[in-house]
Length: 210
Image (tube, rainbow, N blue to C red; front, side):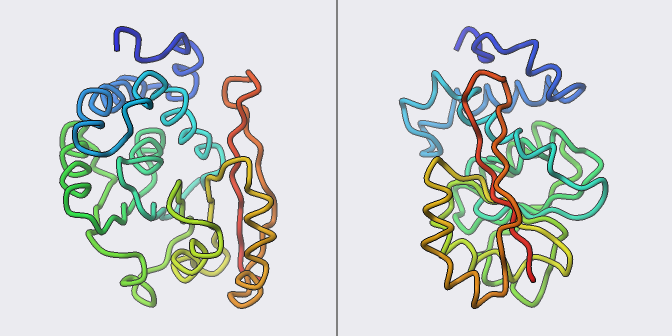
């Protein structure tokens, strides 16, 4: 990838600030090894920065000033690694059950020197009643009905789930209405974030317990 930023370098500098070099290194690592290691599909490499890195960065503006964050199903590190780069002042737990993905995340954390990241090789359900967080994030993990069951038990009192979703987010919310009721949770807002102001919207459902 001769230009990993895809023409978004100025905007990316505003988004990442001092973390831009680390974000670029992470993006390059994904571009070089992501397909080979089964982390991203071959068609994703040319649009890696816009579709995945900046899509993940959209959550950054929704993170708290202080507190703990868990990223469920971290996989390639999206959004967990991206957010940890953006917010070195917050503590991040990356929750990922697959060994090969945990190995990848460990390599990335070491390469980037991210001392605010802890990796847990477990399923999210294994941490229920053991840990709770101010914010839980998830991207491309499961439909809203299943995702709620994984994540809501990890959300601390007064905390939030920030779920990155596609255009079907409103349909997913409707389809999961009985799960919301059972878990005493509700969507307070769906943030429609246009990171580059180019019409490409990132949908983030913010869920709280009631």
